[in-house]
Length: 494
Image 1 (cartoon, rainbow, N blue to C red):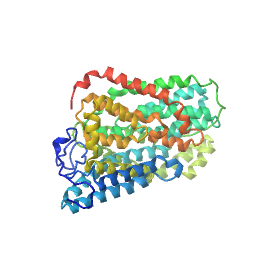
Image 2: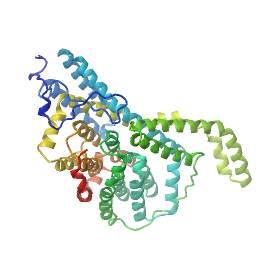
Image 3: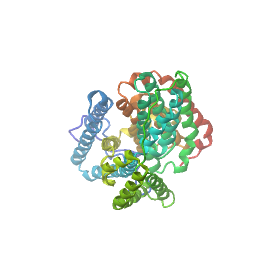
């Protein structure tokens, strides 16, 4: 008995939690991620357990008011993760079982490491494409075309839906928001409406691709849903985007913004980096599907592709500049000739440094916090309450709504850690609802939070909230579409 706890600690009875996934000892070459098991001691009713929950709630409250207090979201969850695991370590040392808590921490850390390296490579490629001006060129093309407001609304929405499965929903939303704020500068109402549409479209597009969102990546790396099986969510995701967009577009006056001239040209190697990114994705898929190795192996190999190409760009830069000076001089293109003076060699490690480290560290904090609470026994309680007290369909739909308030990362990690006994259709359902449920509120997804910062004063929490009933209609319709179109998968268990 430990005197540090208000209620007695008792040995864990595994049979009491039928929804829990009991981990075997997995090696580093396991094909799926390793999830932290429930600990030997039940801390859910103890002072230490309640303190850990209070620390996590406080940390997440600080995350939710990030825009108000101007404190990066990674800071509170990093501290919370340290406190929670320190509490676990202290209790297990007192109980004479330090090896169990150490092993659980290492297992949870491995879960984060695989995902972090995967995301780091993806972010590096996106930053490389940005540095090569791929996204600037796309924005310039849209500006020059002089589309009407209604056309711009639909084009940015459709592009957000199409690009986010490859470039992730956060990057895609920021790109489309930059286009809208540039073209419709000063029109707050239209910018807010477009931003709402972009958030919904980017989240919906990210829900049917392993690369579209962190949550889908987690499900794919867990080996629960195979790469090609995500595309079963294509039509439900499309419905989730189309229904709100149709309603919102009816409130747009069909007029044209003031014409603008913006000439942007791609830097050398931009198209080849796009090809290397697609090759990297293919390598990751092949590693997972054909070799049954973690997808992160293919992504890290793809980082090697980019490093070799960066070496080639640096070595051939002087010769390339000389050819361009000669060509631009002969054509009299003095603007491009002048721009050659600011050309710097391509450096892969500069692209790595520009990765969104706040997001990666936030992800670490969330994974470690949820893993610690799961080790204490709280996820077992949640699993029993949701997946035993309710049916899986109702639980997954409710969790999607909850993800609009609590970020979908901890929601999905909690479900994966619990690993309830669900059919394949139900796993696709939680993948869909966790992905698109965040669109109900502006704070419910990384895309929404980022756009509130980028379009500050134009896109707001209340501006998004006005359209929540319409977005909820799309949410319900997408769930119903999945239940109907993929009905046979609800009888297939993994």
